[in-house]
Length: 108
Image 1 (tube, one colour):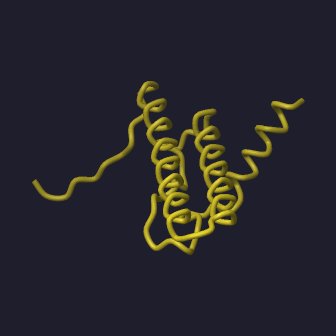
Image 2: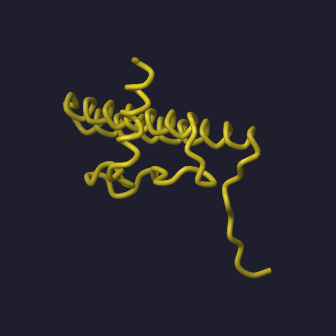
């Protein structure tokens, strides 16, 4: 029962409007994937979404507790690192299963 509710919760999070840029307070930061690689919705996609949501939650908490500009910079740096790590892990898992990220090359 717990697994079903977890999967349903993650599916709901994926189905709702998922912010591409999680926070408006930062002009440039890592972009969160809005669609799974090759359109495949599997456990690795939902793990990625869970990692992104956790990073978002931690960032909000860290920013609330920040007492100076350095704390805010550290919070954003940690957030960037967590998003990059989540994306790297997701891409690695999908490549191991022979799904590739599409690339478009223009020119020669």
